[in-house]
Amino acid sequence: MSAHGHAHRVVIADDHTLLREALAELIQGMGDFDVVAAAGDAPGMVAAVAEHRPDVVLMDIEMPGNEDPARTVRSLQAASADTKIMVLTMHDDLLLLQTLLPLGIRGYLHKTSTHRALTAALRDACSQDGLTVSLPPRSRPLTAGEAETAGPAPSAPGPGSVPAAAVSEPDRDRLSHREREVLALVASGLSNRRTASHLGLTEGTIKRHMRNIFAKLGATSRLDASNKAVSAGLIPAPTAPPASAPPQPGPQQAAGRRPATWQRR
View (cartoon, one colour):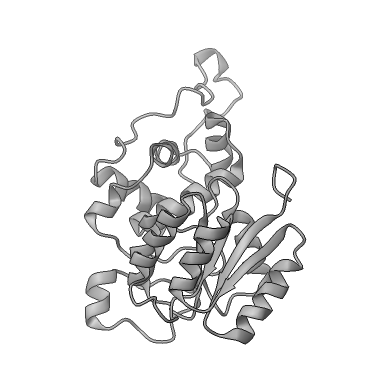
């Protein structure tokens, strides 16, 4: 159940009837979700979202009327601004993913994902900062054109991971204020736990922020994300630990104790 004690309402959109019905049965069986409508094409999905204003819409990419997925996402947002949008698709197109993530989708899952990954992603999408990206290992290398556009190929991401694809310069400017705060602390060398403590958040929230940051910056590691953010002018270059960190020991503490060191984790 949600924080208000009611089941999260879901709209499912997929042009395959059998899959649509199987998804409805799976989601309905979760207990804290209620499938309120299903559609077999993009116009029907947008109409259902406008009518029911669900908490989440689970949408396929390759279905009638969805020739421009980004435009469809905007139509869904116009129909119900508070509805979380999740994509469930056979497409593992990194460029498509990088187009949709900045629009604010809360999930992009490949149809090879397990039911456990799907249910976890749905619950995560209904949290304040939930974002899940799950893609299979690439079955072929990038072509020269794809490599030039998308950057380094990702290494077998799993549920909840993000692809190591580059993003355009305008997308780098889409880090939220909170994401910049988180990344600035991470760049200074704090772990997720200490970053969460400094900002008064949970460690899980910090992890979700970092996944989002990785996706937006096309980063492959915490250090890579920090370097890209500094280069783009999103955060200042780290010069000292944050004020809330433990102070370095003074001369009177030196005897018999190792001085504290800051390490990038």
